Length: 109
Image (cartoon, rainbow, N blue to C red; front, side, top):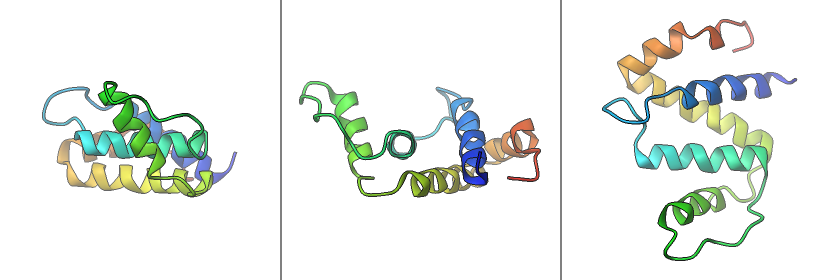
């Protein structure tokens, strides 16, 4: 497993452990950015039709993924890690969570 893959998996695990509600949850835009980067990193370019207009949440998620079209899967993983680090640094609570996480204990991060 490459260093990029390890960092991506660690960042993904931390992002998935973030609160789902309250003041410390990522904003809707941040959640969509993570979603788009994650899908691009795992699947690559969008391979499905855009959801219908009445499927608001699914449509926004699809749009976030589509916005990353053309980005390599490796670059999407790198960008996901960068965006997660920016989020963790901006929030004192999340910064503590990030720094105390056993997920970042390895030298590869």
